[in-house]
Length: 339
Ligand code: DAH
Image (cartoon, rainbow, N blue to C red):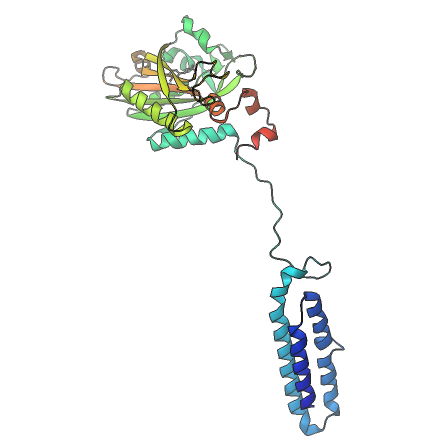
């Protein structure tokens, strides 16, 4: 019996060494450990042995069993990846690639708004949100645009009732913020604005603006230029150029319109910049003393600057998008490009 077990042991060793697949391994398992396998046969033969040999035989068989189990377990992992593709192998291939779950991505305008907030956040600006439904007072009167002022037509507006409207500019948030806070103030205010424009590649009845406002005791036009330059370089890249053109807004004096060198043609001239090499991205200026009066600030003591930029506009320039309607049509082929 002892000899028989020893022979089985060495035979087994050879057979295990020759194993190349999980299937072959499984066959070996059945051969040795199966119900009608070699080990069971040995166990069954114990009662046929002389009594004094049974104990040692039992021990040897147990040792053989452990040996086989150890070999079976050791072999397994190495074979797994090769074999599980075979049907019925019953093993799980941990090296197979997983199923990819399609992830969403941010809307390009949200992406831009996030970037703007981050850039201005580093410059110490806090974010304020006003209201989309506003009173005429905040959209016009307090911004130095009285009822009969000619410039009201520039801010063409959806009225809801006599005095309530959908805000046509985020400048409203300047007033809302100054009413509730004392200087120093350093805020940006991103959000939706509404104007009864006919929709085309460049116009939409709803779009986004981002207002900025700083109020303190010694703010000057140089600060305005510095902040806007820093922003443009951070958002568009360090080779962007910026120029200020004198302009008029009722709530700022002096006022400027600000252009950047066309990011599409790099200033060489293309259809987006009407072959001028420049595109307007925002209006800005020093806060008009009348605006400070409207919110009860001492206009002798405080100065400030404000700016308002078009969010769709700067997004289109950055990514070379030529139609504003793409932002609002929810075409997944467009949206999925902004990872
Ligand atoms: N609210 C203006 C518009 O919608 C943009 C603007 C111009 C905002 C000058 C400002 C500013 O804060 O100072 O056209």
